[in-house]
Length: 266
Image (cartoon, rainbow, N blue to C red; front, side):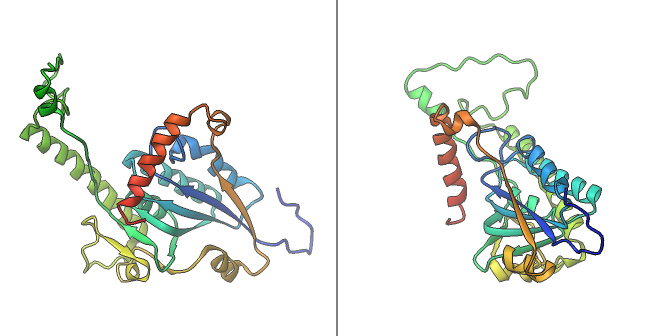
């Protein structure tokens, strides 16, 4: 805690939380998830009585549930400690990355940042023709007619696709509600904001999805003065991971990371 000395004004403190990578429940590589960030966020909001919390975000998205859990934790801590939260987008805050950014009170971007992608996507492969070609028989036994929904080793069924789309529409609706609640009257109601489209830098100003173009350090100095102290908080990889005990898993996670960012040309 910062010492309280009578008649002497202490310098402002801003906790800076770096949120870099895809959002996934799996604790691998640099993936972001609620359980992995819980302790870090608690420290950032509590340690040293910060005047504000800044989120440095660089994420193409990922798990809807983890995005929601992380965003909800940010809001709970902000309201509990009565601290304002600022989000600063670096390369990208898309899909789940934007979901987390919109938990902040204000969102600032670089002029090349990509934001938006308010939608839901599901992708996979179909191997049914491959196994037929090589005489491989797929044996699956279930109780419940929908238990093998979208099995990649069986031909795609229209009813399975319909069920998936219903799930996606529900998740999309919740995403839209979150953004509308967070951004409120700042959103441009005359624009189609929830089609999954993205905007670059200052283009997003017209949508109301961001508050302006600005970078973390100068913006925090502008608000809190040149003597503001920025205290960084970033999730660390496990000791075993850093010493190569999970090299293969981390390598695969890196491939997935690169593929997710590549969707936005990054």
